[in-house]
Image (cartoon, rainbow, N blue to C red; front, top):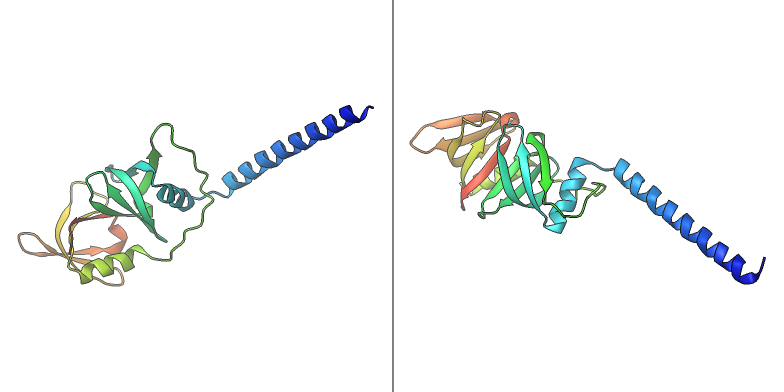
Length: 175
């Protein structure tokens, strides 16, 4: 075999091996993908998304924080919405956006409860939603305990909510 043909054969073999490695790495990354990892990637890219919640509600915006058990979305209107991951049914990107495989690690151990407790310290005005989208609670976030969220309702009264039933909390007015 002439030297030129032999070199061409080696180059072709190396190119095929590189394509096989790339395909294998992509498949491995996809197999290691997690929902939280996909959220992290979308947040880092500041990709516009539509989130669909199990209670039927939807929000459009950009993911800004992904915690251990929640994601924070800044809506198109500039409102911040904290969403428990267990409340997220799906997250959709716009047509033409790059596909993510979700193999990214969550970079913070911050939890939804810790975030709510910080907001309670600021007496933030909030809208809290659970599994029933017709039962919105609006008022001042007063306290967050081990498994309890307390809201002083607009118009008087206080709501005591089990932490496990909180699917989303929108900050309606800053501190």
